[in-house]
Amino acid sequence: MEYIDGIIIIVGLYVILATSFNLIIGYGGLVSIAHPVFFALGAYTSAILARNFGLPVPLAMVAGMVVALVASVALVLPTLRVSGDYLLIASIGFQLGVLEIIKNVRFTGGAGGYTNIPPFLIRDFGREAYVALVLAVMVAVILLVRLVARSDYGRAMSAMRDDELAFASLGRNAMWMKLAIFGLGSGLAGLAGALYAHYFRFITPEQFEILQSSAILTMVVVGGMRTTWGPIVGALLLEALPQAITFLNLPPSILGPIQGLLFTGLVLVFMFFRPQGLVPAENVWRGGGGETR
Amino acid sequence: MLNATILLQILWTSLATSSYYVLFAVAFALVLKVTRIFNFAQAAIMTVAFYSAFVTVQWLEWPAWAAFVVMMAITLAASFALERIGFEALRKRGVSVMFVFVFTFMVSEFVAYLAMLAFGTWPQTIFPTIFWPVTLVGNIAISAWDLPAIGATIVMLALLFSFMRFTRMGQFMVGVADNPDLAELYGVNKRQIFLVTVLMAGALVAVGMFLYGTRAQVLPQTGLSLMLFAIAATIIGGIGNLAGAAIAAVILGVIQNSSILVIPSEWQGLLLYVFLFLAIVFFPNGLRMPRRRRRFATATRDIGDNQDVSAAEGQV
Image 1 (cartoon, rainbow over the protein chains, first blue to last red):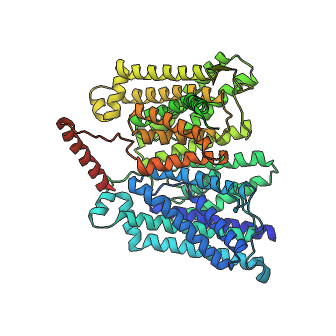
Image 2 (cartoon, each protein chain N blue to C red):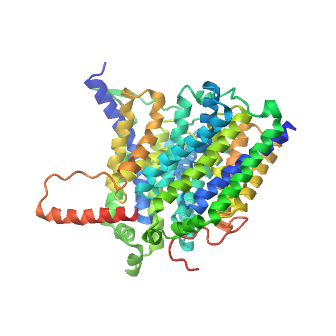
Image 3 (cartoon, rainbow over the protein chains, first blue to last red):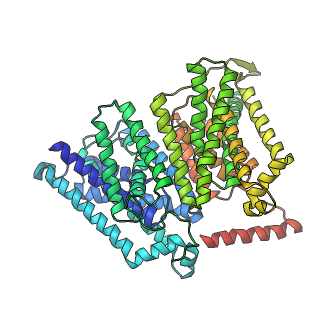
């Protein structure tokens, strides 16, 4: 039962990650690969506050979310001021740089990882309660992103994405909107990180490497960008595949690269042969401007 | 402890090691200039280049020159495939910049995982040893690697420069970089120029990777960080400015190597990301020398420049 609970929680968390990443890259049109680093920041912040400072776990989780949000604004604000094209480059540097810091400072446990994270809910109410919590957060995140995407704000988002100049000339502030989208998406990733930390109770920097970036990106691209169901389908499928591979009992030195090949290979195949993903939305990868509807 | 000899030694060594940084930066800047693609797949080309030399020397036990020839051939073939299968299809489809970003980055990651699977995740070098005999000149140790590396870099840069300056094809490249559609109207074969550009970048990368792999250890992920260094240099040098990228690469290389005097070695890796961030935030249009004296002729041009800047800011 414990195994099944673990899988449900992992899948639930990846649905949160993929859905929030879809908000950033799909609806917002902001290309970044740094999503796992906000996942990591949420996990580490919440774990350290709860273990070293004795903060109640729910408060620590909220703090983890806030730190991820603030860090994402710190990444986006200087970068977007220059040009949206630089965001991807900056995000690669940010991701690797933050992980480098986590590996080298003492209070995060360094490269060996951070252990003994206080559990939450499990002792008093059992594992099922935690599963229910993760699933509830997952549903809330899906509904929230769907609500944002379908509201007036969502229509403004697609206007900004498709033609920023026209959007700005109508007196709307594109910068604010990008900040809000990126902050919200990254904050949700931070929350997922906090939820991860207090269930599995052990985190290491290598869990948040570029392999995770590829995984999350693959979930969104394969599932289908700018759709509610796309990231959910993608996350389910791509979490099920590696689980199936683990049954082959391969040594970890082979398992890691094979998962990486699977994720990146799938993205490439889908980009070439089915760029709209499994759950298609229209005109996903077209360049801005020039579109008539 | 710190004296002139140590300073000179660090300066010399970092100058020598920046040779491959220069080649990587110029390759990246060249592709960006002519094709306008941020070619993140350069990391994949680097990985292919290194491991093809590694296999020829360590597994097949061929001599160094044969390894270099094999490496060059395979790297050029990989560059050819990247342009003809990848970039050309994307260009035809007219996809967004974002698509190209994601595509090239995923190609690099795919190749890195392939290398991990085939060669493992431990560091490798082209030759069994990376220690080179040292001669003392004055009090400064000059290794047998230093001078050939600097020489090879200068030869490659001279070839590139003469190609772009004096050959017909090179001038077409500049034309395509400036305005691809206009160049095509004048009868320039855009498709061919793009291919030549990507192949030349591949040749630069192959030489650079041969230098790197004979002096430092390489992991499947090394290509990515070497490429980030090249990107930082390209941005600081000013996009479209090959000489700027080369000079920026030397400066960054010297800073990174001499930082060992002030920063503990475990933090040196972080320096690269700091460079990258500073480049994007503070020098997005490249580093420009401040102009002190304005003569009339340059003053009018400056006004033009300023207008460009304010127009660019208006877009943000």
